[in-house]
Image (cartoon, rainbow, N blue to C red; front, side, top):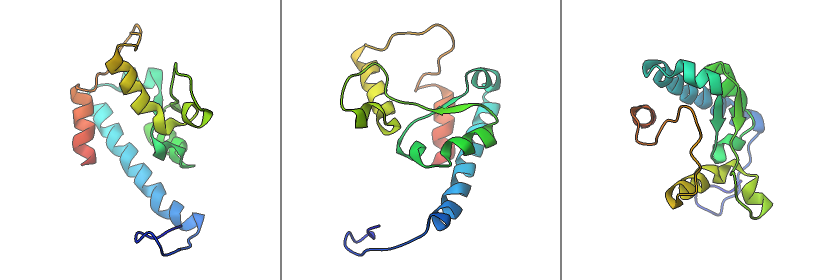
Length: 131
């Protein structure tokens, strides 16, 4: 990989990275689990499972860490209802941005059942814990 200076080439092993990233995943999902429990969303979240988006979701152990710590089924979230290059429409790194754009544009179709809005205390608590 390229160092932070943008020029120096560095080498590392997958095991070394896994030893650093694995515990961070656990910490993140433990904080999320605390918020889920403190906000009384356990029954709702357990029924639907977790959907992980973003570039970090592509790291090998992300899904497994979520399932292990949260104790619920987890899957990668992919962009929905769009056409475009396969590298975008099959990549969870773009799912949140595309979903937010569709929502803002009014093309998000409301689904029956429970929804947690971005302005809810649930998301505010997650943001607070992750800061």
